[in-house]
Length: 165
Length: 222
Image 1 (cartoon, each protein chain N blue to C red):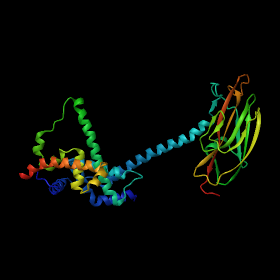
Image 2 (tube, chains in turn cyan, green):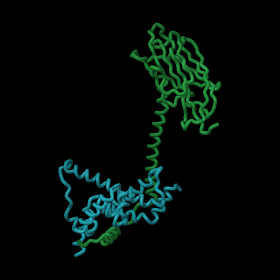
Image 3 (cartoon, rainbow over the protein chains, first blue to last red):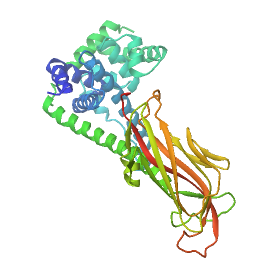
Image 4 (tube, chains in turn green, orange):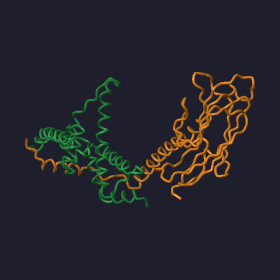
């Protein structure tokens, strides 16, 4: 068996679900999370000369996943800026969605920018330190702290009323 | 604001649990990964092949490329005016093999090189240099560039006919790590404008540099 396949099998044994969950927190959508997790795994193991080491494979895949998510969000935002010009109509989220969505956390996360969301997920779900997040996302520590602070402010506003219900 | 970091961790944990189990399997991933690896390898191989092709074609292209003499402005002759035939250690090499396959040599090996220059009628050579190059030679008004050591340097007029040069060179024991060197030469002279076949054509001044033999260095010193 090829070495990458062995590492992948080991990783898939018990960590696949965890990877999918991280992707789900980032995307907020189950299907997108499925695609994101797969894409990250394929990219991580698809490099002929840079297959991840067994001990670092999971962290490597997670980093790729977050970066893919941020890149995707950037592309999407570019498209969203141009879409009204092309189609002549602006995309307005259906207010009913907010009512239907029972998950306040997902809704709150959705209000964050992609970078803020990535920082929050890495800090409070993956339990990474600020320098580790900075290294994974290619940012400075101060930038990560700023994103976290802004994200916490937004989340506090959105999540506090939910708790009081 | 009531939200603490601990609360947020719990919220995220709870939200993450809403994700359904992955629907893809290791088998699915392996297929995609193999495809991606194959694609990358194919692309990398294509790049390498292109680089290798350039590395081979460029010297070959330079072989026949004569540059007109200073101020002449005339196109290079259609027919190769001067022919150089090479034997190394008694082994005669066809021009094609000499350039593509080359000759295997080892460090400290002594080479006896014989170069026969065949000059057609009405042509003449005013200067010829033969030597070793690392793969980048050129011609200036004062002589060759990138030819070191120069094994032979002749500044006399050579008329039509066959002229033999015997050279000796010992491959240096300490050479760094080049994969190959070139036995190369450069000459300057006067040749008929469209080659030796048309004897009434006016003579033009030509300077040409030539790669003669690729000396492929073996890894081990002898």
